[in-house]
Structures are given as C-alpha cells and as structure tokens.
Length: 206
Ligand SMILES: [Fe+2]
Ligand SMILES: [Fe+2]
Image 1 (cartoon, rainbow, N blue to C red):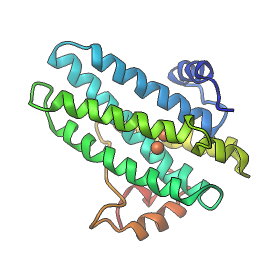
Image 2: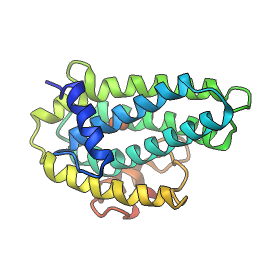
Image 3: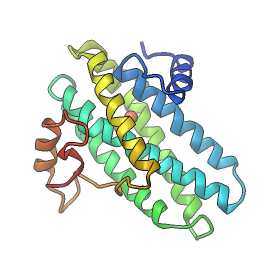
Image 4: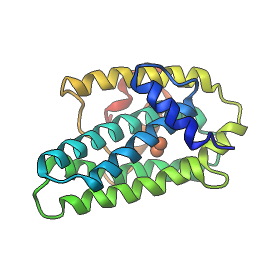
C-alpha cells in the first residue's frame, strides 16, 4: 500500500519545519505533494509577479527532486525493480527539464508561459502516478525489494539540504538532461552508480 495522501501531507509539513521524513519513499512522496500544491497555487495565481515567483519555486523544487532521484534513489533501486520503469523515469525527467529550462528563461507575461507551466504540471502528474500511485508503481516495487529505505532517505535528506542551500544562494545550476541525443547516457549511468557523496560528480555531464 502506498503511504496515504494524509501521511505525505503531514510529512511535508514536518519537512518544511526542517524535520527529515522517516524514509526515502516518504521523503519523495512529501516532495510530490509540495509541487502539486505549488502547481495548484499557480493555477489560481493572478499577476505576473506572483506567477513568476511560483513558477520559479516549482522549477527549483523539481530540479532538486530530480537530482535526489537521479543521483541517489534510481541508482539504488536499479536491478531491483523493472528496468523499463526506471529508464522511462529518466527520460520523463529529461522531458520535464526542457520545459523547466524554458520556464526559467521566460517571463510570466510572455506568450506560451502559462501553457508551458500547465504542460509541465501534466507531465509531472503522469510521472508521479507512475512513481507512486498506479498499481505496481515504482514505489510499490521498491517496497517489495530489499532496499534500505531509511539509509537512502538520510542520504537524500542531506543532499536536499545541500541543494536547497545552493538554491537559496542563487547557485543551483540549470537542469541538465542525461538521456537525450548528445548526452552521454553511459557516463550518466556510470556516475549515477558512483553516487553516494552528495555534491559528488553525479550532477555534471562527463
Ligand atoms: Fe518523484
Ligand atoms: Fe521522478
């Protein structure tokens, strides 16, 4: 069973006060709730300033979340769950990153800005469903596998702190794709299996 929506909402509240969720899946689920809330706020927001602020926050949250998954979570579960599901997750992240780059480079009063945020929200909704909600989702498979979710959660929590501090300092690098033509997917996978040290080389293309 997936952790209930209420559990991940409660985890999110605690996380926002600086408290680490108990394990990897609960951390990721709380992150999912966070971006869902932000997308909802964006839908209701009026005015370029507010929209720009929310969209930037969405992009930052998603970039950090993708790093946690690509550098720590996905490599740790590779070989223990369906490979196709993991490969698709990387490609879905990369699809989202293209829109994230577009949104970060754009201004809320530009043509197609709202449409880009909307399409990003739809992509993320689909992706979260595959990770967390659908039958035999990634998280459901991970729960059945032999994975130390507490240790993974701690690793991701410390990387998250580090990346949030970078974001606060305005130093979070742009989202980089790992699976598209011209990307060195092999190197990306190699470096993701050498993950481990937050701030290690997993963020950079080789
Ligand atoms: Fe996720
Ligand atoms: Fe993901």
